[in-house]
Amino acid sequence: MQILSQILFIVALALAAYFITRRVILIKKTIQLGHSEDRTDRPAERLKTMLLIAFGQKKMFNRPLVGLMHFIIYAGFLIINIEVLEIILDGVFATHRLFLPFLGGFYNFLINFFEVLAIGVLTVCVVFLLRRNILKIQRFQESRHREMKAWPRNDANIILTIEILLMWAFLSMNATDTLLQARGVEHYTEAFTGNFIISQWLQPVFSNWSNTTLVIYERFTWWFHILGIMSFALYVTYSKHLHIFLAFPNTYFSNLEPKGQMANMPAVTKEVKIMLGVEQPEATPAEVGRFGAKDVKDLSWKNLMDAYSCTECGRCTTACPANITGKKLSPRKIMMDTRDRLEDIQKGWLKNGQTYDDGKTLLGDYISEEEILACTTCNACVQECPVNISPLDIILELRRYKVMEESSAPASWNAMFSNSENNMAPWKFSPSDRFNWVDNLK
Ligand code: SF4
Ligand code: SF4
Image 1: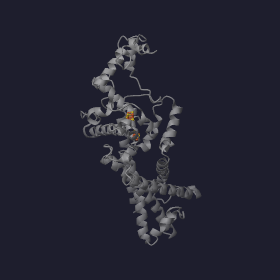
Image 2: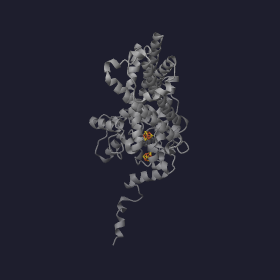
Image 3: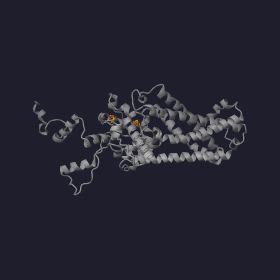
Image 4: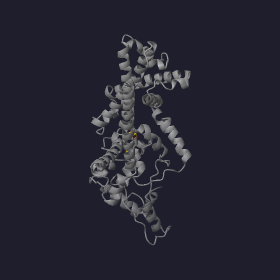
């Protein structure tokens, strides 16, 4: 029986490792669809940004209470999972609390600490579920934000429920384990820990159970806990919760330039410099390529990593003046659409091979012209994002494509373009008339 359990455990572990690795490789390949962009300068500043924004969750604390609750989930989840290492080794070697002999008294301190975090995580998850489903926080409601339809809404509920169940499994596993130790049941006496700080209060729930029932329940929660964590790790790669991992590289590779500074297109800058005579044309000019972006392949790898890092929190959308004034644009939807496009490309690869082209494009099939034209380029979305994502980068690239490749800007914009070109200002006045207003001064 013991050996069968060990084999089953090793098979489950190998399957989980295989599927997770496969998925990670696929996501990496999808991000690499984007063109290159150098984000390796100023490493010390990058490290500081990552430590503050991802590790320290600085922007989350703009709203202190929610920030604190999010921090409890995040810290609890990361720290409690140290205990998973022991569970894995116990599963492989059929031992019971393998680390206890090595850590001595510190072992109980650690498990007590994990239990305090576990009850914190469980409580916060319940509060977050209530916030979303009973208090109906506006930015998560489909009635106000069309991108929050079935899957994005259910994704958050699924993850919160899984976390509650995992924490319950951890605490009740400890409660039944310590009861079995106290009753001197074989295998459980291999490691005598005594009671733990939180789970001891759950013992009355189980104290009338027979030894056999207790062993079945303890084994069930042990398997549920570890299989749950393996499934969770795989599920996360399909979910917005990928930000748990991607927030770190995504903030490290943040844009460190001032927010209002737009990235010029090198080919256009060169042309302007040649026109102004500050640069000479090359004998054989380099191929210019496409202006702006029509599909994800025209965006940079960082734009695509942004899409996978988006937490779908909607802070960007609630700060967006276009969205607030009823326009169709939602920066969160821009990020979700970009990710959907990447996921659809992946599905096409898996079904029809890597050369497959479904004929769709990000602009047109996922994001409409009306959405990108509504952007005021104010950068509020970039400022608000807790993981330093820039929806504006993608919007600007899509717009550049519309204007420069398809020459399809709104008429009012075209008038502004020709005024800028002819009058060196957006208005319809000759430069020589600029100071006419002075004539009327007394
Ligand atoms: S930059 Fe554009 S998308 Fe972002 S908040 Fe401003 S108007 Fe909205
Ligand atoms: S882009 Fe940033 S602020 Fe907007 S939904 Fe995604 S994570 Fe939240």
